[in-house]
Image (cartoon, rainbow, N blue to C red; front, side, top):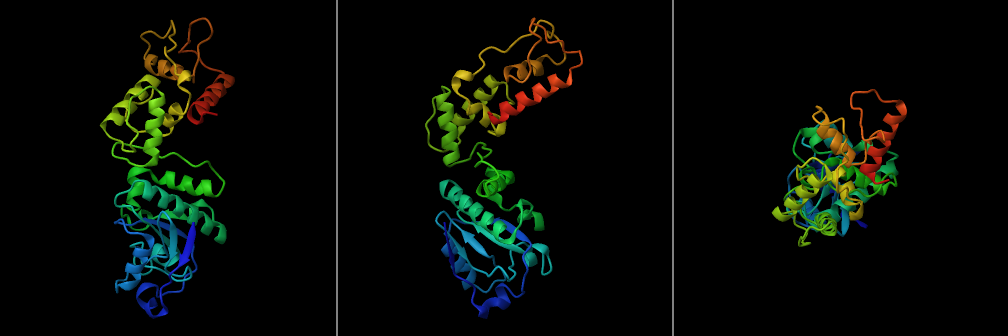
Length: 297
């Protein structure tokens, strides 16, 4: 990704960035429109409002608008607030409509964020969202469609600390991640158009898949559902292991679900012994099986 300077002229410092700043971290925003980074910066520098930020990022480039050693008015926490006075602001473009352009812009923003963390010797705890400073629901597109932890994991991936994550998807989501979801559901035998739009048909398929896998049937594609989807369809458990001594037990349903996931097993004789204590070795085995189920490793 290219980072291009289009810096605020010193004649406008009084309005846009009046104070010298020693930055302490990075604040992430989403724009409220579908303009490019260049258009965002041109508009911001061209008006007389006390609103500003350091970078705008789209699917192609990042445009550097305010020097990192000057403050910017972006966090809504006042003239002496930590966000406005001590944080580098990054605006992620194309957030009004979302979709593939926004996802590409978000990935570029994660790359830029990781580069700044390395430059200043900061860890991931120095990355904040606008909401942390003023309570405003921003970055709204990230929070509503992906979750804040998803963006942080994108940054971690750029730092080499994690694999590139898959987002939490719900009805209404669009983009390449939804296409990946639809492709995996198709491989599991669900007839879906791979159009990148999480509509009613995709929601119905997700719920049916979750039901068959013994997962919570909520229609939300989070880590557990992704882990199950990424297995080979041949690994699907067709029949839940039943135990002779759990019929009518208060924990029968959850025991059956965990058995379907391969997290718990019986004693080899057809019994589960649900009311007997377990050993540390058995507890460790269950934890290992649970981690394998979630991560696939």
